[in-house]
Image 1 (cartoon, rainbow, N blue to C red):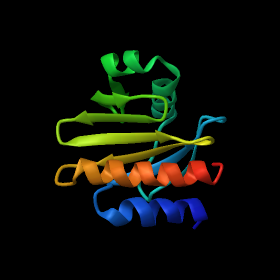
Image 2: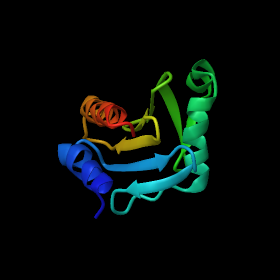
Image 3: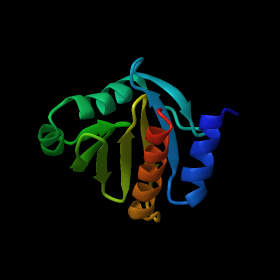
Length: 129
């Protein structure tokens, strides 16, 4: 297992409030690593990358279509994108090289998912990733 995959498993899934996680390479627009069983299709990668390349206001207004579900965008800025669909959600944090993606499901605390994902994103930015 790679160092990056260990980071995902330990810092995100280890909270028990992140269902799945992935790192997407921004430059290549491709999946770098993901938690076991979490596949991110190329169309989902495009959706997430486009969420940051569009005007954040437009992303907030339009929402996201991710993993065959419509999500209402609750935050969109230069480094963070949060979206929810009923009791599930997706948190995306942009670093220099990656999009860090974390999902939560019913029974998990979205605030813990957000905090863990943002802290890992901040760590990766400090490391130059």
